[in-house]
Amino acid sequence: MRIPGAWPLVIMYHGIVPRVRERQNIDLGVVYQDDFERHLKELKRRFDVVHPEEYADLLERGRAPSPRSALITLDDGFQNLLDYALPVAEVLQTPLLAFVCSGHLDGGSWLWFARTVAAQWTHNDTPSDLLKRFRRMALKEIMEELENPGIGEQRGDRELGRLLFDGASSTHLAQACARGYLVLGGHTVNHPNMPRESAERCRQEIIDNKRRLEEIASRPVRLFAYPSGDADDRVASQVREAGYSGAFTILPPRRSIPPDLRRFYLPRIGIYNAGQVTFRLKCAGVDTLRWKLGLLNGDMRMSMAYPGRRRERA
Image (tube, rainbow, N blue to C red; front, top):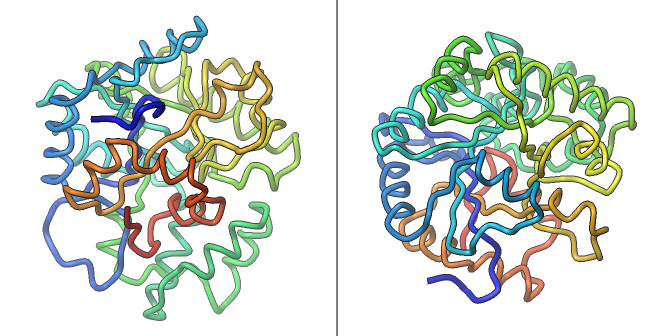
């Protein structure tokens, strides 16, 4: 059952991993593969799981998807998407929308937040404070900070880091797209904090990412997700001008949105290590209710957007 007035359900995951070991007292913001399978089965029972291309078609026609519909998304484009999420989705015949950063594919350097989390493991510390500070910086500043000896390139538990943070193989992404249950969405090249970047830097991040993903998928890439869900009207306009049909944030802004940008501020619900009760509450629209009551704000959005955060409870 959905809370009246709730938006269509768009679920957001950041990583799917096997249940092979304990989490070493670090909340990694990922979901185990068997829990993911249970989530998909429940979503299929309770909602009309919509294909991402159909969702884009509706947005282009100015129509809102039904509140009974559900779209399932995964962010960043890690290899665990292909190894552990997609096999479950294909068995259950459930389409997935993967918002992929192209800069870390095919063995490229880890995304900045992945490097931050892994570096902090070396010091037996949680990455929350460092992530919060980096969240206010442009990408160039972040990368300079990551070169400091106090942070460095150290990856702590390398086996765990590779499982969580290695970028996907573009060849395997292309093969998955051809099979029909994976659709690629834009997520920039390097996952910058878009409102902190210059207009030209944002434009290149959006356009270069779209071009690369369309080469991989051999079809237009029509939906976009802002890194960390962070956007303003300048960034939203650039996404629209790049030819996208719509874009997803996490929480919508409380201010008035220009009519031509409304489909570029679509909300999503993040699932991070959620137990079954929390998952069902989120699917029922509890985050929408909390947002309407003013119980979710920008700080919460930041904490909901990165792996390595403290556990987020409903």
